[in-house]
Image 1 (cartoon, rainbow, N blue to C red):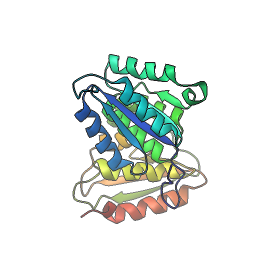
Image 2: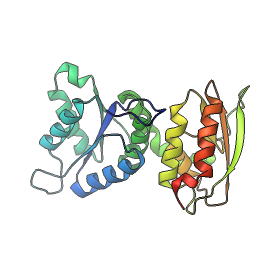
Image 3: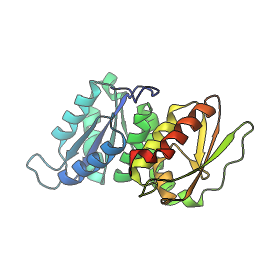
Image 4: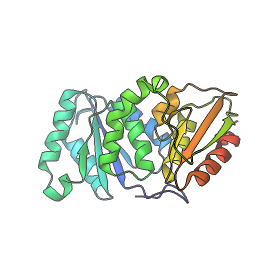
Length: 236
């Protein structure tokens, strides 16, 4: 799969979205693709006849297609969709099955968070863990206690300039930047690699970002994040 920019790690995990509704699966893929443009996502929604339900064939075709390029994470909406995905995995040969992970996470939040993690080069296991943690990180983003200050960490205070603030696209871009570097990065005391946690801050134009980084690449991470924020994330 493709690299995530000049400083990024290679994207090696694709995502299959399994839903009882073709339109729902397509919509989730559309949203996630906006936040993780280099990740290959496939929708497997509805029955073979276009009705409400799930299709073994659709899921199998999507999984096999993505296996040709790397590892695969599958997210599902309801119980029977999970059963269909499990049936597909059971039919794979051993080598292929080892590269497919069925994630236990909310469909929309999990797919978005997982896709951003995949964009940063995460393997299937890490993408699945991110997807599984998505609901909790979003619900409690504003309640998370501040992390313990780390020795040697640096903090910069930035002001959001773009008109819509830290909404989905800027949050995803910031999360991808934070995941590129060998550094622990936080924004206003939440994990900067979590797009849902960043969105949960609810920050608008003119509000401050306290960006803290600690680790070997801390200076580089802060420099690139500062540039992107000061450029308004390329928005008006």
